[in-house]
Image 1 (cartoon, one colour):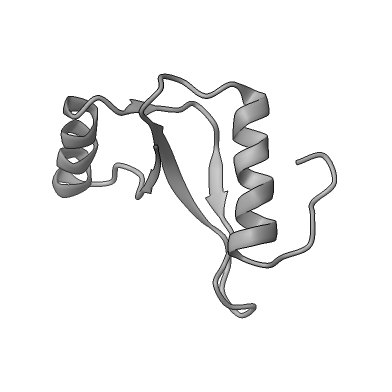
Image 2 (cartoon, rainbow, N blue to C red):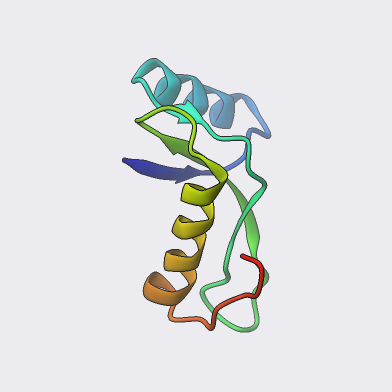
Length: 80
């Protein structure tokens, strides 16, 4: 399972991260920016958590490409 959450910026977001880690999810080290839902918005940072331990870079890049192409219906980004 893969989950995106807001970065830790306060007590509540820190509690969310602690909860998910307590449930067995692993925080991944990749700087993840979720593509904007609308053209007038900007990408925003999120933390990627997974249930099977830390993702490999290859797995993360595959997830990011599928996020853009399938979920967001955006063109591919060279090098991603």
